[in-house]
Amino acid sequence: GVPLRDLAAEQGVRIGAAVNPYLLEDAPDYRALVAEQYGSVTAQNVMKWNTLQPERGEYDFSTADTLTAFADEHDQAMRGHTLLWHQQNPEWLAEGDFGPEELRSIMRDHIDTVVGEHFAGRVYAWDVINEPFRDSGGELRPNLWLDTLGADYIAEALHTAHEADPDARLYINEFNVEGRNPKSDALYELAASLLEQGAPLHGIGLQSHFHAGTVPEDMVANMRRFTDLGLEVTVTELDISVEVPADEEELRVQARDYRTVVENCLRVSGCTGITVWGIGDADSWIPSWFPGRGAALPFDEDYAPKPAYGSLQEAL
Ligand code: XIL
Image (cartoon, rainbow, N blue to C red):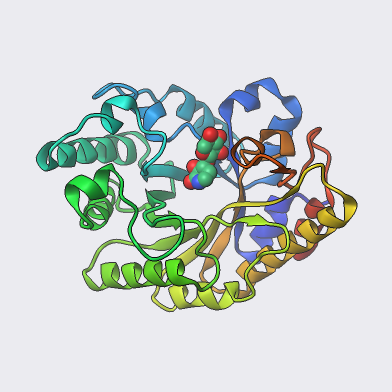
């Protein structure tokens, strides 16, 4: 059939995938699918802080550059993931116990170097803030940034990223905020107040790690309240897991859900597109993080298309 990236382009959106540069090298089927099917690429891991700045002041862009080179070669846009998060930080940062002034200068140095000096012009959007809220409920998540700098760390990071690359679209990326609930209400309040203060926030990333059968009914309405603020929204990390071993019925529900998510995005002007979090079921993060669940992606363990792939085709 027609590649997903071409179908998406006709609809004025992008379909992307989270990509691992090691698999691009080792798995020819994986490499071929990334090149053929996806028009946008997110680093599944290699633009996180532990990869980019493993020791203080020592940056390593080698694996991230493998990815940007691949994306350039295949005419793919790059989403940057991610700047400030509570996970995958190098030990020197996580355990550093820095005071506010020093931590602020560490943050600025990282953002200036990564967003400005290194990737400016090559990354069109950044998840500046990842997972700022607790798993559920409406409270900010305690993390090294919040604990030391207070809630202003969010506005400060946005301003710093905007100065570093004025053309990049700047996002807050979060999970369990796809429908209306206390967590997405709090995210909405945060976004509205950042905009009111003049912070350069351009978009909301809805990670969209779903269990089959649980796509929220009010996802469109929820996306629209954010776009009504003048923000764009993007489905940034879509996967739809089932209980493994998967049976046919579950894969059918999964396929229907993939279709629903794409249709939801297409119904919202201001939804820029969808990124799936991996290519085939073997390279998904789900089985190792959520034992008993898996088979979450549109291609199976051998990179053969599943019913979910067919519904992406039809929906786009
Ligand atoms: C995951 C990666 O896919 C895994 O390989 C890694 O071990 C852990 O992180 N939310 C995010 C992503 O924002 O960065 C996470 O990616 C999945 C959850």
